[in-house]
Amino acid sequence: MNMTASKTRFHFVVLLALVGTLSGHGVAHAQSSATPAQPDPASRYSLPWQLRPVTIGSAARLDGVLAAFNDANGNLDIAVTSGLSVSYQITREIAPMLRLGFVRNNAPGAALDGSSFANPLLGASYGRSSGPFKLALFGATTIPIGTGGGDAPDAKAARANLAAMTARPADDAMFAVNYLTPMVGGDFAYVSHGFTAQVEATLQELIRVRGGKSASALDQFRTNAALGLHLGYFIGAHFSVGSDLRYQRWLSRPTTLNRVTGAQVPLSDRDKDAVTLAAGLRLHFGFGKQTSVHPGVSVMRGFDGRAFAAPLVTAQTTAVQFDIPVVF
Image (cartoon, rainbow, N blue to C red; front, side, top):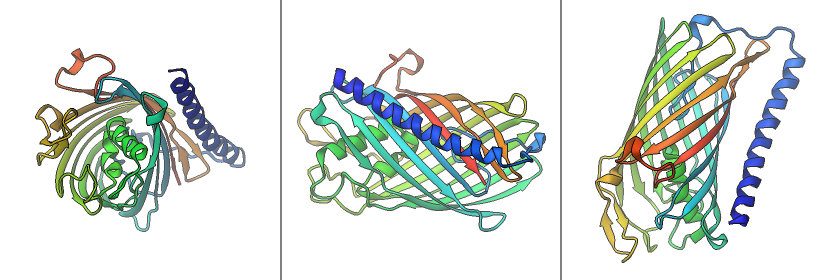
């Protein structure tokens, strides 16, 4: 238990170091700039925690999640997942993007600890605006090269991928490393006088392209859909509060492994749905005429069928997220 706690503190310190490095770079840039950016108060947009941004632009986003949950045997599992997203605006309406992910899992017992790189996510967004209304369409696919997959997967990396799906459900397709996952989605937002209301819908089709001979080879195809809602509000020019509600459901009935017998069985009705609620605070700073930084921290909670009556640590996640988007 002491070893697990020590490793958790180590990964937490590494995450904070990354945050400090990026923030320090922003401060140095600010000192060399004489004119800070001041966005129009009527168009201040509250960035979501679990949803995609509805704006089109060139940006880099570093985020990390420290999550705790119970594993399949009811033991405490702690996972630290990190993500890096970059986008580049090539026209007023179009911005290609790339997202990378990594997980380090502190499982019960040091022998089960592991880490894994996720499948990269490559795609593009198309956006249009009309007054306070913003529409963004999204298309992407994962590239099935992540670790912990194939016919003879590394057991520790494979377990880390499963932990990442629980810790970070919004990115679960990236950690399904045996699957090529094309996805499409759309976001619609109302942004006016510091208030943001955004809705999102996403459809994913998981297609297994490797690992067909492994013991855990399950479905050839899986279909997943998600809906999201974000509400945010600016308090002054440099501070905002925001909350997300995200609902995810398997439209197909995936096969899973029985924890006792190891036999392949259909996923239970209770496990077909996942609901997560995130709420947090964000700061907003402008550097120069075009660059802005929006660091924030949020708390995310997963709910099962017992909703708010569930214990703090369940099979779903309780997590803290650190998020640093930089817009150029």
